[in-house]
Image 1 (cartoon, one colour):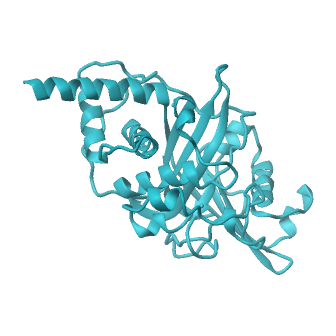
Image 2 (cartoon, helix red, strand yellow):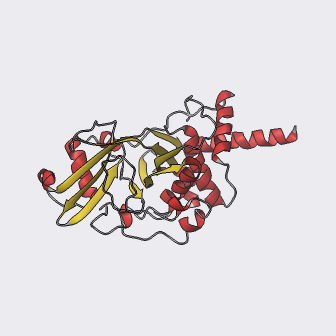
Image 3 (spheres, rainbow, N blue to C red):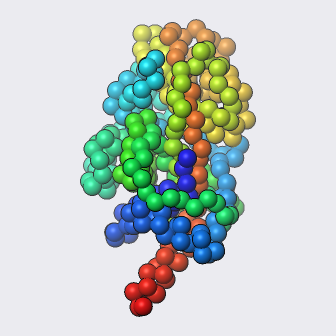
Length: 307
């Protein structure tokens, strides 16, 4: 399950990159968050998720192979949908290659499995345990929040490959910020308007039929053939509920995201439609919440250095 500390760490990675300084490690973030929470500091209130009608609730997936779910329940890589040809591409993406001036430099110290490919006041929450060598498929989302509180998608990229969280979260925090080709790279001036969300994915299971899944519980990963081409796309578990869609509306929207242009009532006519359902609970933090926590950390570091 994603935690507040995971979101704080994503902000650490992005702020450090934009401001050109070293960031705290995931272990340090988890330790400082545990101390902050246990000492009764300003506690994080839910920053909320994207609401129905918010813009662009779509995710992009990173990896290197064709998006065809397999029956053995392994988590195969899939092609970067936002950069692929129409046979695998999402219509919500813009064909582009990975920026050589943003994430390649920003991610130079992260694992090759993620850096070389490209796809929210605080209420008291459970305290994170120290960092462990956990591996999870994951997504990182950036949103901007307007002065009126309206959230708009700013970048969302993830992977179905299980990654060690320290390197994986850092890598995808930066990739989602700089290399979602639907948007320009996030700039330093935007940092105070941001919120971030982390989703760790689990329980991948082939669906017995395309509608064999539960709204609000399952995310979907689909692949299908149309006019001799293979298509694929994914939605995280919260998207359908946030948009107020039925199961069929969700499936049609996801197929269109993948690049299919047929009529809504014709979705069953595509060939070899495969649906893999999965689960994942999202955690979110806003910039002001990260900043309050970070300032507390800096005061504590200074106080301890003076002792």
